[in-house]
Length: 104
Image (cartoon, one colour):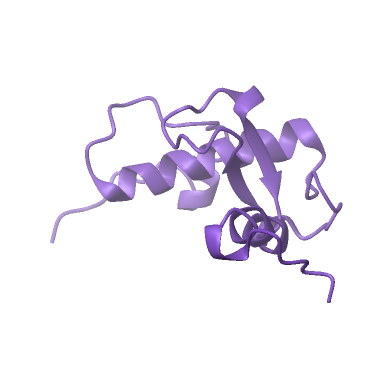
């Protein structure tokens, strides 16, 4: 059995300094890792709360693209929001809900 060349105590420790992925993304998994890098940067820059309702649990916050283009990852196009606010954003844009008031 081959010996692993281990330089850090854990994967989390090894990736602690990373703020994004610096290689070409070709597999679906790469996109998820890259999105986590974006989330980490936004958490550090924007205080670690939902930017709409100030929900404080960082583990569940998601990265939302304001222009709805998943490839446009400029930080000014990204918003760190909770799943409730993210759902509301996309739920309200459904054509069959136009004119329906969610406050009822």
